[in-house]
Length: 71
Image (tube, rainbow, N blue to C red; front, top):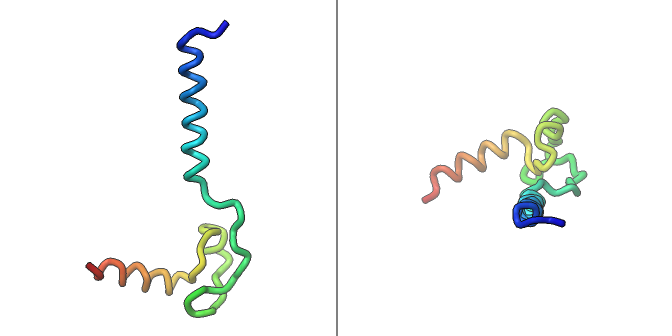
């Protein structure tokens, strides 16, 4: 028979699993190998390091720089 500690531990484990599942990266990664901004190919090394990336490194750097100056 489970006591209160066992029930609490099981509840905590379910909640932690749910929280982790909500924050996981999408499993369906885009198969598009071209940058959304410029259309150039996204290098294989970038695709491997950041499979969710939709822009090449140069366009991502531009996007990030613009983001820092907009306020």
